Amino acid sequence: MTSEERRRPVTELVFLGRGPIVLRAAIVIAAAAGAGVCGDLLYRLQADLASRLASGQGLSGPASFIAHGSGVQTAWVGWAAAVFFLIAALRIRRGPPEPSPGAARPEQLTPTQLRAGLRREYTTVRVLLVIVALVAAVDAARLFALLAATGGRATTLLATLAESAGLIAATAALALWGWWFGADLRRLGAL
Image 1: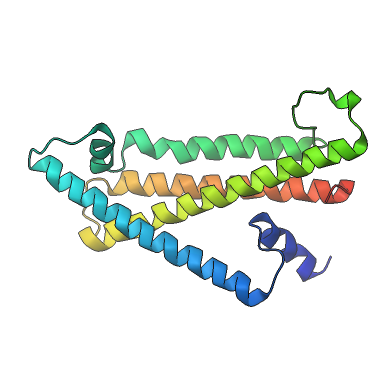
Image 2: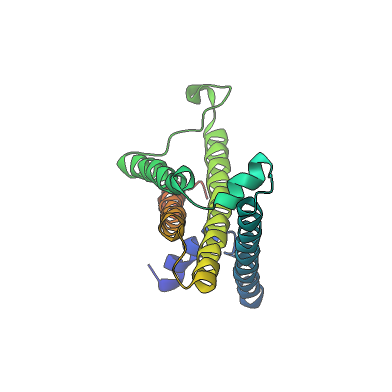
């Protein structure tokens, strides 16, 4: 296996497996810059809402939730997703890919229909990976904005760090799942 063959599935996972390298690099740079800007704006919104809440101003439920920042109620979500994605990845490793659930039983489907169903599932995993990776990047940028603004003295720092690490772990587990699933589909000739 050449190094290009090893790299291809990585870029393929996030829909960057084809096209000019300059365009693919520009997409990655734009996504990173966008996540950084969004993370900073999210932190500024959180800080503004927190100051309003501290001054006694009434906030709506969602605004109050954002104002409180990271905590026990948000730090566990990424870790729970990481566990479920890892379980799914391990299921892929332990046996052949199973057909996606559908209206018809797998025995009634043709090999072409089975492969098409597996490709749709792989596309769904890849779309989910892009979404989770972008959410993790925005949350990591929010963590860095919090660190920069407070010098590491924020009361929500540990919870924000746990939340961000959980989202990064979920991204890694989902990428592993997609990597193994894609390898199985290539081996079966479905890709």
